[in-house]
Length: 182
Image (cartoon, rainbow, N blue to C red; front, side):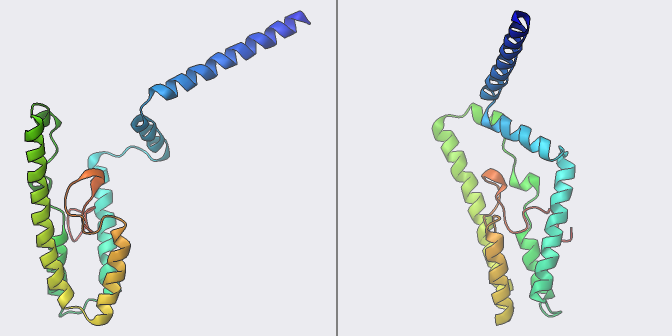
């Protein structure tokens, strides 16, 4: 009887220590590490090229759906193509990549100035996109405008018209694809 009790107590102690170790490990991971671990468990890791291809495919499907939902006529096709081209995200080289090393040596005022310059670039890009949007919108029929307004409002929940760059992958309605034709 004493042997059984000792064995049970030893087993419970071992389980408690194991649970404590797991809890300690979970506490030492940052929330970002916990999220990354959870995401990798849910979906396999994609290379940047695979992710870009998948996003381009999604953007092409979304673009084709909008084109069909609007019922773009032959006379509107040119305006549609101009609109799509203007809304296309800038190429990575034009958009610029965040270089953490370049920022580490900057003083606080220099970092603030750099952020202001980046925001000015985003604003300029958004103004160009607004011009293209206004040109396209002007050739739509009232019914098409209603459809477009509804569709763009739904896309707004997914960063419609937020310009380029920024945190969290914000971008315009076609941010995911690098080409209008997919």
